[in-house]
Length: 506
Image (cartoon, rainbow, N blue to C red):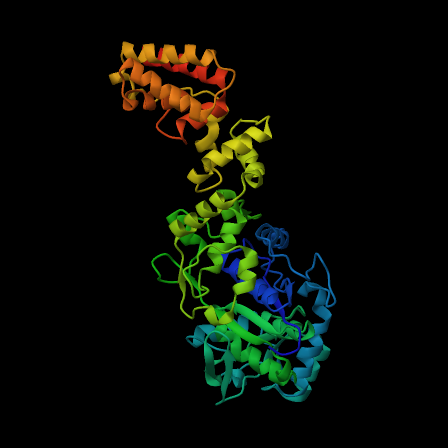
């Protein structure tokens, strides 16, 4: 690493929900910056006004906050290279586009949309480049006086890069190694649109230079654009300032065939967005990992492991651990298959690790949505300590804990009623009398007393343990039955035994 401070950026377009592949790109940028005492920048690439979606930028910012991936510089925070929205930087891009024209590396193209469409209909797989640029209306094919007249008249035009013929362009990718391109396969991309807005190709190069970006992480789908960007860095005289590139492997469908899409998630029943996204035009809701019940720690952990590992068998990493261990060398070239079952495993493991006190706020939201308002935080923390081993998603909190806050309204009678008899009724009547002598319930003490009663009545544990559980929770689930009883308390346990016995003897 050189003495220059590491500066990386995530530069999304505000066009909709944030795909987990996008969040992984953020994560790898963030980890690389932290590992090298650098800066992580969020830059909004909103130059395509036709695709701009209201609320999308705020959504992206909220996603990063949820994940704990806070940028050092951003539209919200500001910074030494503000503004960080490309739409607010519009005037500066034309200067660089015109400079390219002046030096013969770009040209004005006056073709109308209709003319372009006509050409596309005449030429299969038409590319505006060296083969056809001479047949189009541009400053390379038209006489200079005609070009000047069109410009003076304010004729709508774009500026296109002039891709050279018969050249090989190459660079060294931090993940893929040596990569080369034949310029004859590359078309003359538009750099500046008719509305004066730059395209991604021009803006990303200009902004990376002006913001002193040292390393650029992006998905491998951007590899075909690399020759255009390499030429722009060269033509603008900045080649020695070009960031090192790392093209990240794709996140693949579970079967490994093709890039994971929102459609795959909908088809297979799992989210692909970080958080819920509602399309403002259609009103369509796409569910996110956050709302499904994922902890941000688990989400970040599982994304890190999609295409990276530290060379050991360790799978659970905190963000701090990842920041210390992350290295480019350990990123795989191959695509990483997304496995939702494995994703849920990460979440279950992180819930187990989480201090119950930290889960309390999430639990209150889940329970409140089901009509349970918990009055005593201390009780809720105890409940969470008892059930968190059984949780996969945060929304499971209700299914695993509701019976601590309200009595069962129904019972798994099929598991109890066929074998119910007077001896069992007598056992539980005796247990009630025993409990009434106590001030409080201690789990270990109650268990010992219960087993002693069984022996006294000539019953086996199997005869009474399951009915006792079903009286308390309604079914065959929940943590250790005597722990449940201790937390419910004496009066509540007595009430539930009486209600259960009545239901079993009906």
